[in-house]
Image (cartoon, rainbow, N blue to C red; front, side, top):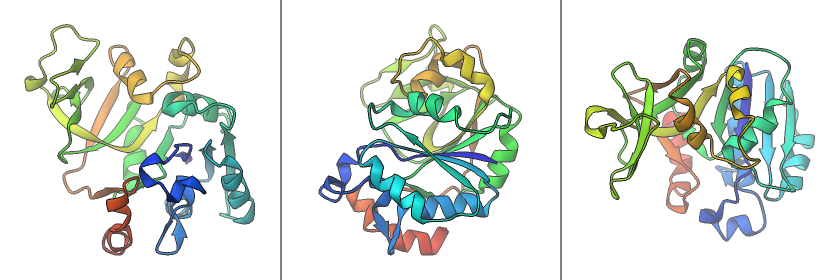
Length: 243
């Protein structure tokens, strides 16, 4: 299993903690978030892992050098330029062993009870598979009856983005993105015209008119975004209950 951990973010919501260390090394129950995610990925079969880094990248590099996870773990160094999720994925993809197998992508600040092996197995049937839930948020991805991605909306502002003209959000399934998804290397050629820095969600929204990008809706999914201070305070208890 190929896996990519997005760990390059600035972690601005976790200041002042992230004034001196990367978000990936913020501890939960005495363990850095990166260690928690890497051990979970290796436990479910990931054997070819890339971690991207920008903010205090040397600290992440040193951490990986000091910890042996029993599998290949490489660093995709974005010190010179933060590439956002789309550009970061495109750069990291060059480090994986050549294979058409999907890449399981996991944000470093996401804790969940997701069944990752089942999710990864299901991903082989599409170009990209996004783990989603019905949690309340202001921004939703829009899917049709076949769970194919067709757009995005901000319910507070009424903004709608879609490659499909006259898309009616009220006729779509509205799901919240979890920060966990699977990406097929088949989509990489479609990224070549994109700039160095771009969002993977922006890419998915443009590509969904030509590629099979689907939702995997899990009604019992429990998820905690530890990128927020109030969530960080609950993270240890959440892990005891769910992870």
